[in-house]
Length: 209
Image 1 (cartoon, rainbow, N blue to C red):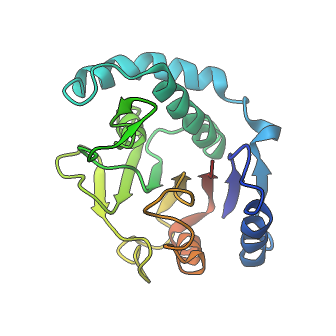
Image 2 (cartoon, rainbow, N blue to C red):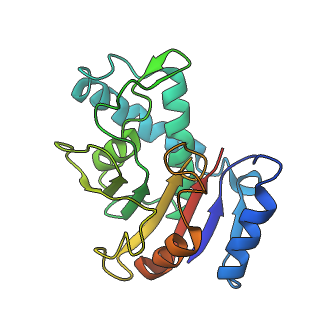
């Protein structure tokens, strides 16, 4: 399993410990910082967004009338990472989004914008033809993509997923969110599960900031 760091910057006290943990578990894994390959697929990501964003806006206009420029930049950044991990081909890829966000996110406002923590990435991936699997501890009922209510801090929380069934596992802010902080998730429980369920040539992509 390859490991891609697309964080672009960690709190000072975190990066060495986090990377040391990853290297200890995966001596032969490839860890690539986004400074090396960040923009390799940026044009493709932009083209995909131009095709899918109007449909996303239409389908979810009751939740957020218009995706903000910042929303789109965040989603595009994640999409670039996933395109890199899948060598530019998302079609039919199984992508596990850990801490994907929830439907009807309760009272969450960030920089004056509501509903930022809804599962926008899974929705976009579904429209692009990927098999997105959303994992969150809160409500995802009614979403069109495959989804599961899971508490990732529990041992064997991903035991329902088949071995070597996932092309890419994605974690965007999972390790720095309030609910899923490093103190709430035991990485030594979670990461070995990813090693089991991600295909040998698959990848784990994380964005930590």
